[in-house]
Image 1 (cartoon, rainbow, N blue to C red):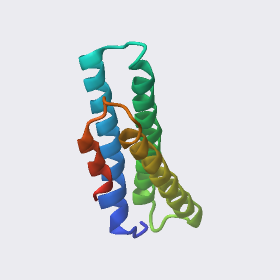
Image 2 (image 1 turned 180 degrees about the vertical axis):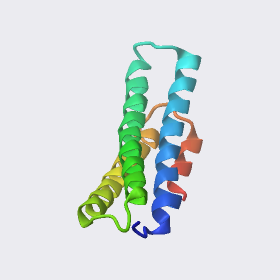
Image 3 (image 1 turned 180 degrees about the horizontal axis):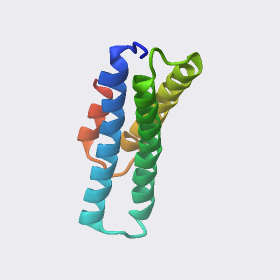
Image 4 (image 1 turned 90 degrees about the vertical axis):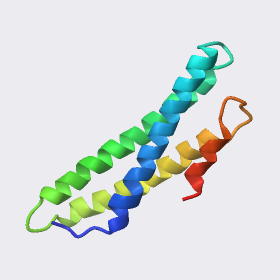
Length: 119
């Protein structure tokens, strides 16, 4: 098995989870409070897209981490390279989606979402 930096497991996956959770929570709250209207539809779609983009990265990264863990005696260089490229892509998707959650002029987005960047 490859020895991966601890931050891969303790930082990357929780941050991705945080964005997915916040996007779906915000989407639910917006829908519950205002419904699906012409005014809220773009926001609801943006929140759904943000969650889906990060969910895809999370699933890909998690699958690769399992593959690395199950590879004995050591993961191949190709798998490790793919893992690190997936981490870079996941963090790029995190940044894009997290910024989409906290940016904009919408009054529907709660201020507590800024916590994504405080870690």
